[in-house]
Image 1: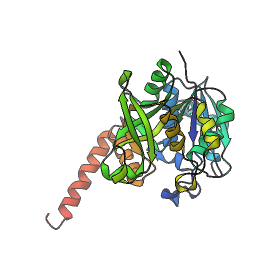
Image 2: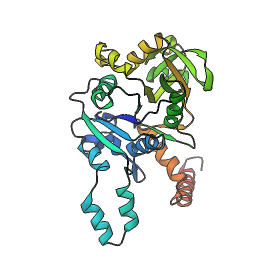
Image 3: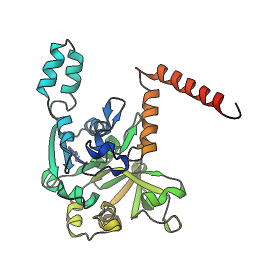
Length: 299
């Protein structure tokens, strides 16, 4: 049985779609109510048995490390104010037995390059990759299921979902092969952001992956692809053409928090399911909708 204990979090991007908010704050720390989106990804990884978190950072991303580091002054201040439950919450963001490593991506050369920057920390081990922009919610989360599937049959794994034909140009799109055991699908190839008319399917790869260290050998020799960047999809395509990649249907609800409307949708859905705010939030939405209807010309 091959257990994956390392996960890579590429967090070096500029977050230009959320400017000016991300001019001084990493997009990965944008909150869903009171928890940053990157923490959801970290919690998903830890629930899957990951014990080593590898963050690939860039300039102006020190705050990501600060969030997961201890803050003794804050903990002491919370205790002094009689708030031990808040002290425990901030102390246990990274639980005991889980370690964090921070690796610098010197310049933004693409997702494939960001993953390659983690090679010294990963070593000769299989590993997961989680993109914090893809926020997952549900009783079954993809990383845990992918790690379990890898333990049964080691190979590169992708989390995938079907998307509308009009949206295929936004994603890496699979050329699917035969059905495999465990409900997996063989991947014959992957095309990064194809035209809808030329897409091999409408099955898109999202921000959850499991790799063997073989991917590093491919990334080191890749030439720049789409956008002049080292594309992770191009490395996956090479592996797929050798019959080494399988896809798993994403069992969770995915929110694209790299997109403004996707981020707003996540906030609304999480608030509606919050034990603390659910009833108040439902009442707020009801009141706002009634007010809009009353103010409309047809009202």
